Image 1: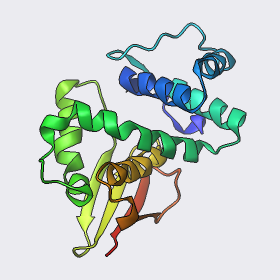
Image 2: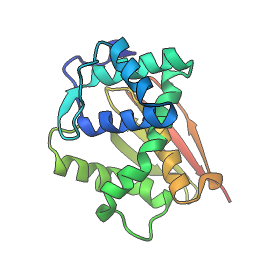
Image 3: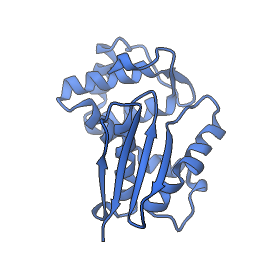
Length: 190
């Protein structure tokens, strides 16, 4: 998993801080400490507004996968779902009050990712191209050299849960999860 990431790629500290909260919520603080120790990052105090090597994140997720028996993809998906309430709180001013899951997905690249880049030019969120396929289907094209489509799928499911629409959508990956470009189909059920 780590071998596919450019060693110079860096990720915003907020992702590490939220990953810590995610791990502590699933398990406990000592699990986080053990993951850091086992990946050689025991002295890392991830700060919200700093940038860190993406490979650190992958090392922690890989070790968490090995420790828990949960696939790295599934952990990333769970992490993506976990991120949603915090992301929607942080970027609330960019969200139209009438939006639901459908509109959020259509506007994520322009509104949310645009805001992320505006607030910190060092960030590099994945590029999302969302295409309408009728009134009940969206195709989300995820592009990122980081190959973290599990987080994107989790965020989609987390948005649906946030809007109490989990039972009204079906999310299907149309391509392999570990590619730079992953297509995700989102069906809106009646």
